[in-house]
Image (cartoon, rainbow, N blue to C red; front, top):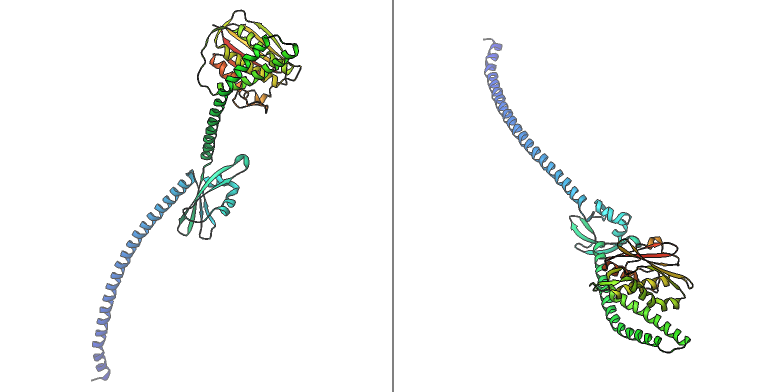
Length: 377
């Protein structure tokens, strides 16, 4: 038999075995490939699910961040965040508004202990503000919460001022009551002396005494009147008679100040609903106010007319007038342009006139003029 033929017959089984082994390996490789495809598909689906969840989480985080940012921007308190190195990483608009250029100055003054609260005064003297800064610890950061307590401090100051004024008013009323009785006795005695047989020089002394007593009495009555809430009893009276009596009452004061008092009254028997004592206090206060603002040798004129259904009384002086910016202030209690006046006289005048149903106003006309109007009965 041919040797080559024998060798070929022997190689065929080996080739078949090799082909079978190759086929088996290819089958196993294909199975592994299908398994790998399945695993890749599963991993892709899982990755897509995780990416979707991560996207939702990122979107939620963004919404939370935006919401937190809006909250911080809308907060009525300032918020400042410092990182671990003490540098400013966030400042909300309210903190910028409250601190302005003083942000860095405040950061150098504020403590860094958590849960600590400190109070600072910032701003110029005319625009001074009080701020409270509270520290709160975060993760690797420090949060400063700034509140403006200026309004609270102002309210506390006003309450303290009100308590002081009430105490002062009570003390003044007590003193005024204690002083008024002896003043009344002095006024009565000085009036009796004027009716006695005195020489001209002694009469002049008594007139000066009367002027001093009446001036002091006006101050005492103003103190009592400005703190009185009640309304005096009113009754029909002839306003002309009350005015003439009041003019006689202020005559010693005018003489003492070297001022001439002129009267021009055309009231006939006009009646108003009033209180003679209160109206005399009004004329006395107006006279004292005019005398303070009129130089010696000047004059004060009192004019009274019936105008339709009202009595109009104008009290004018020859002084320098009232500054325009003070025309609306002169009837406020405590306001005065003179250091020697407590600023109660015109406030009391307004109070009494209003309780009589009248009006009072001031204007400048060759000096100052204060005009009052009362309804006629």
